Length: 204
Image 1 (cartoon, rainbow, N blue to C red):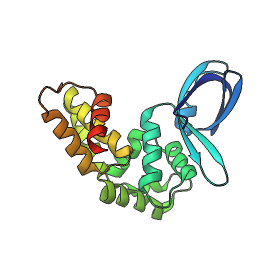
Image 2 (tube, helix red, strand yellow):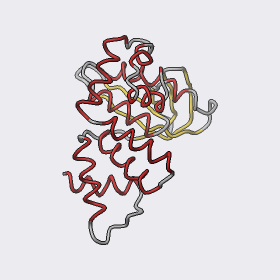
Image 3 (tube, one colour):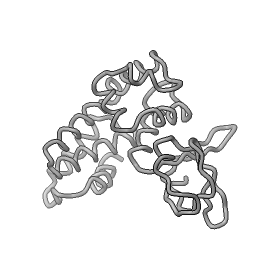
């Protein structure tokens, strides 16, 4: 699986970029949020990627940061009826923070305005992210933590969100991180990345 690409921008369009990686051109489908942050043609850039494989095609999707890729995967994995093209449209229609805010506030109207989404899909996004995954609870905890500027709680919340994006339910992700922090000798100021790595060992 291709996790990321680092190369020079050979071409860039609103929904696709071509990266020259050691003389090989990779066509990468991107959301508008990534396109808006790309440097000029010829500059080097690193894109996090999702390699989507089906019986009929292999597609690469690229993202400027982990928040974009995590949301892309979350939509595909946890919301019925959403494939990679629809997930990309969602990211193109709303920045990640705005999308999270819309889900937290049950603002289906904002989601329905995204091209290709519509009212029924917007309602399904809100319902399934809340009821099936509990991801909104984690987002709300993360926003609350950022509001109080508690680095330790921010790391915990970000770790839980990262585990949810990997396919775990909110309850088991929260439990794994909490138990990890209670472990004697474990560094309570550990970063979100370390919390995710250590929690994965407990969950597998």
